[in-house]
Length: 124
Image 1 (cartoon, rainbow, N blue to C red):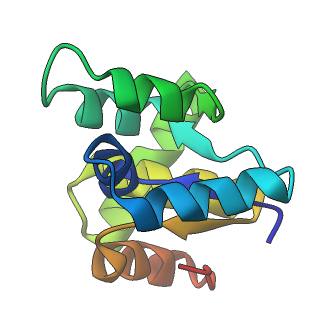
Image 2 (cartoon, rainbow, N blue to C red):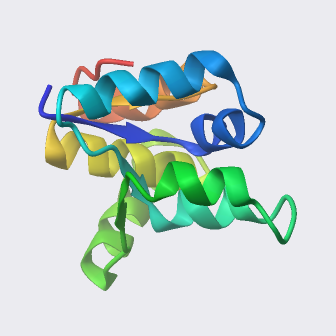
Image 3 (tube, helix red, strand yellow):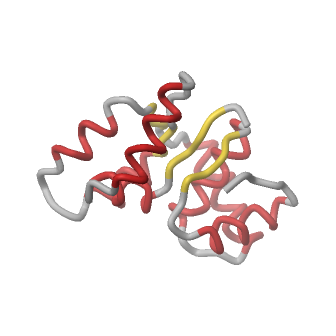
């Protein structure tokens, strides 16, 4: 594992002040690991309410990864191969595989299904 990628559930947990999520986040930071948040994950988490100060503080110590055209095409192909239509989940898996990251998720079943389509083992 080189790093860690957060899915939407991780951001929602942080925004809800889930102590376990904040402790996990602090542990990564103590190891000098800057968690990655794909921009589609941020968009999905941000739609909950217009002002999310707690989430803003959480994200300040993360790396936000924009989605390039090349990545979007690869993600679309992976979604088709995995038979999974939730593009945000596929974005998380694609990036985690590319960076050799672990994934922090609230839905490990979906993440495993997508990773299985790539025949890649992810730490979840």
